[in-house]
Length: 220
Image (cartoon, rainbow, N blue to C red):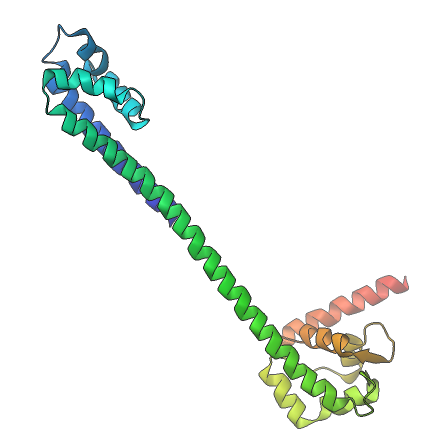
């Protein structure tokens, strides 16, 4: 993941700067003992590491290059390369974070769209069943109409395909669909009841227990 990438980039950057510090101490600090600037920036290993950290932040790196290139002009190539390498690492991290967020957003968006499409198909299928069961065209299902549609084999097969479990007693089924005890249910109540019944028989039993507890709580 991103954490592992950041870790490896940190290790790589640390190795580059640590190795560079050793070279600078040996080739600049130890060979120019009478040069105050060289000793200030590269006289010891801690100073050389601090110097590389300063270059890492792009602070005073030109002044540091001037001191090193005064010893040997070829050091300019080293400092320019070091700056480019460090900035490349930081840019890679930034691009990696952006790309990961874009990919995650696209994945989440695709999941939401897929869920929305499945939800739309689910509602359309339930609408067909609801309209077929609504014999009087009132826009609501009576308990008798609900009993009729649930008992039909074609409806049972359709429910099974959609993952809707109706393998409970009729009294419990009525409680799940008509939870306001109005004696009828509109399409939205029918959809909510079917959603409650989606899943395994164990889920349905859990739902019934929750319903009984809620009913007894209200009664008290």
